[in-house]
Image (cartoon, rainbow, N blue to C red; front, side, top):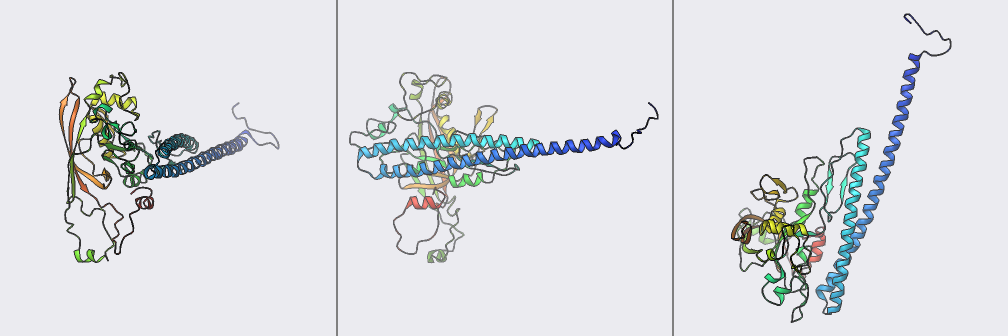
Length: 432
């Protein structure tokens, strides 16, 4: 067909028709893509509306929990207290269910956004690590920065077995939440935030836990990258026994002008005031000797359940069997080293023990009138007893804490009203 040319009169040549057809097909393809993207965006909008509904449910239940807690802490009617405890447990169950729904909805948002990004050739959204207790995770349409919030409840190391608390009464009954012979309601250890310990009850154990205001600031600064390994679970280290002695020292802040501060005119009170020079030092005992009478290597229970009314998941029981008192210290390292602290060690597997301490702000709850914002300057551990596998089962831990200013930090110039901790806590985003 050499030398052949198109000679059809009044009709375009194939070379003229082909570009026009390609352009038309591209228009159809682009329109189909945009229609698909619009459908996905409507799905994302629906998911976000569902998240808002669950958040509203959580907000209502949190108000209910506060109301039930007020009854528990102030009522003298034991029946009313028991009913309030049951109702509060139900409200927490609803919150957990809503948080789980939010986690799944956020996964749907991430997957749908990735589908949009694949169509439009944008950078994919990397999903964040979540837990069953985590709150909302907002993902932008373009990827990039995300606003991550933390779990509503803290997760603590497992308690001791009931038999290891000394004698019958307050110390022995703290796990079961029952009343001792004198009629005191003992349920302080069954809390999901150490802020609620020692409020209206007798008994309770000291706790070091993440400072919610500090970690929320970290959550808002996250970037949506594959390298960012973010755990939104709030962690705490609960003492197995309270310390027998606590040493406290106050140091001078050299950078301040004493007359000006004393006048009350200087309303600025830096959060670092007194740091390093003011300290809290104490020692706690970790005792896992009796746990090994009840635990199999896989975490299953030998005989009757030993941890009272507190639910210790099988994974935690397995960790106690494998690591002894280092199970408890692992929760301290999770607490201190923050949402990016956990990594895979070449020798010890998944752990937050990096060999050094991050200078994190944390909450220290030593007692009803001894709550402080601190950083841990130093810890020293003495393992006193091991089992045949060289797992430490009796240890002492010494903490040296540097004081932060607790806030809000405004000098009082007249007779102060009674301290309303709930109001202060609410004004600070729900947490002091």
